[in-house]
Amino acid sequence: MLIKRPSDIASSEITPPEIYRRRREFIKAAAAGIGLAGAGPLLLGGGSVLAETSGGTAIPNVRPSPFSTDEQRTSLDDVTHYNNFYEFGTEKSDPAANAGTLKTRPWTLVVDGACEAPGEIGIEDLLSGFTQEERVYRLRCVEAWAMVVPWVGFPLGDLLRRFKPTSKARYVAFETLLDPEQMPGQRRSVLDWPYREGLRMDEAMHPLTILATGLYGELLPNQNGAPLRLVVPWKYGFKSIKSIVRIRFTEREPQATWNMMQPDEYGFYANVNPAVDHPRWSQKKHRVIGEGLFARKHETLPFNGYGDQVASLYSGMDLRRYF
Ligand code: MTE
Image (tube, rainbow, N blue to C red; front, side):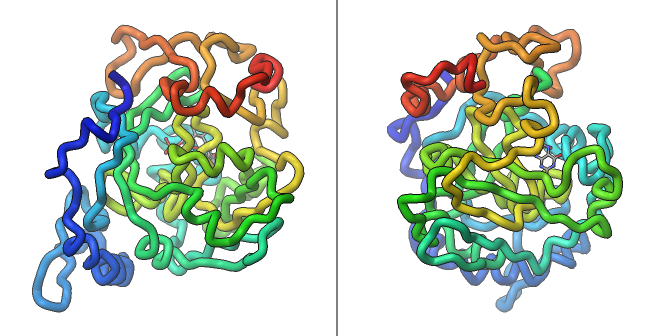
C-alpha cells in the first residue's frame, strides 16, 4: 500500500491541542536560535531543552499526515548529500558542500499578481502561522531515481488563500532567490536565473501540494532548499523549486526553468508518467537512492502512485502532448 488513509492513523499519533498551542513560542525560540544550531542544545526560558537530532533545529509538534506513504524512508545522509540545486553546483554532492553561503534569516516571501491582497510574509510567520505536518512523500526525479523523504510543511493552498486570488489567477509562478553572492552557481550561465517554476491553480490548491519548511523533523538544510521549497509528489522532482522568494498569481502559463531550457525534454506539467519516456531514457522504472546500484528497480506508477487523488485534474487532456 502506498498512501495511508485518514482511518489508518491512530489517534495516539495526533498531537494534543494544548501541546500544539505552544508551537508559536517554540518556533520563535527556534528561529531566534538558528545561529546556535549544532552548537549544543538550545535552552529555552524555563530551562527546557529543544530536542536535537542531526545538529539541525527541530521543528516542534509536527503533526503526522494522512497523506504519508509507509514506504521505507531514505536515510537523512542520502537525502542531504545527493541533491540537485544548480545555484550551488551541478554535481549531486555540490549543494551539501557549497550551500553554507546561503543566509536564510531574515527571509521574506512576496506574494503578488492576480490577487486582492498582495503582500509579503516572513519565514517565522510561515513557521508559526501554519500547521506543520510531516508528509512522507516519494520524490521521483526525471533522471529515474527516487527518494522517500519525511518532509515537514503545510499545504500551499492554505497560504495562497490568504492573499485572495482573483478569477484571473489561473496559474501560480514561483521564483528562487537571485543573489550570486550567496549562490555562486548563479555566476555561471548554466541556467537562466533565477530558477522559476509554475503550477496550474488547481494543482497548487490540491491538498497534496505542500510548501516544505523542514525534513526529518528539522528545519530544511540549505542544500534541500531552505528555508522554503515546493513539494508536489505526483510530479518530477524538478518542479520542487527551492529557496522561494516570490509567488505570483498569473493569467497565463508561467515560465519554468527546465521547460525553457529544453522544452522537448521537460514539459510544463511534468507529471510522473511511465508511459511517456524522456527522449534519452525510459521512465518506466526507477532506482531508490540508498538501495545500491544492483538492487531491483521499482516500477514507476502513473502520477507517482497518487493517481487516485490527482488523475481527475487532467481528465480529457492528452498527457503525451501535455507532458
Ligand atoms: N530548485 C532550484 N532553485 N534549483 C535547482 O537546481 N533542482 C530541482 C529541484 N529544485 C533545483 C530546484 C531538481 S532537478 C530536483 S530533482 C529537486 O530540486 C531535488 O531536490 P532535493 O535536492 O531536495 O532532492
